[in-house]
Image 1 (cartoon, rainbow, N blue to C red):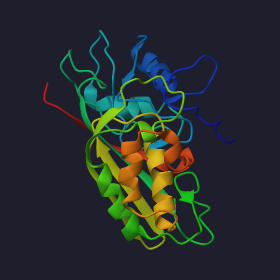
Image 2 (image 1 turned 180 degrees about the vertical axis):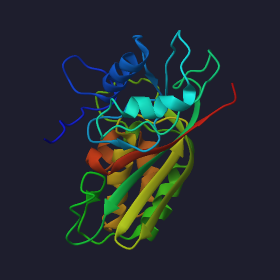
Image 3 (image 1 turned 180 degrees about the horizontal axis):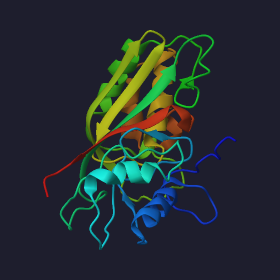
Length: 238
């Protein structure tokens, strides 16, 4: 029997989600109801190889046994990689210093069957050198309103990008962005804009103009969630 698809991280009534599934597993192994706090949300179709979350329990439980115990109760699409004890004031979201997202494009003619849920297939040949030139204009503190999904609730669209690069290995193009935070659909819109650069529809310098315009209509389309993955979360000392 195939597993039902998860609708993302955030707990929602009567819908299969990652937060709710892990909370259920924690209650089974500890006997305590908890509120799991993640470093941020991932939407349906978005992957994460390095999500961080914290919870608090009253009873003693061997830290080293938590991953094995939780994984025994979780669907195979959710895996706990490690666990550690942290100061009580630690908060997975508020103490986060940097996050790195990668958007993966399969630039082959036929695409892939095995990795279809982790890559966006785009068969038209892309120029990754021009894409890498363009993405450098996003480094620094900027108002990323042009790369924010229309209708989102976030009022402050200023974010800092510490590193941004586009690399190719064979048919696989990876767009990697490290920042102090990301707006809803921000990485997917940036990726869509860079695809237009790679296809030769716009020049790399145009990305700087799009950024400064603070107008969502100036940027490219929002690429599907399939290619997006949270790959690293960094924390400041507590």
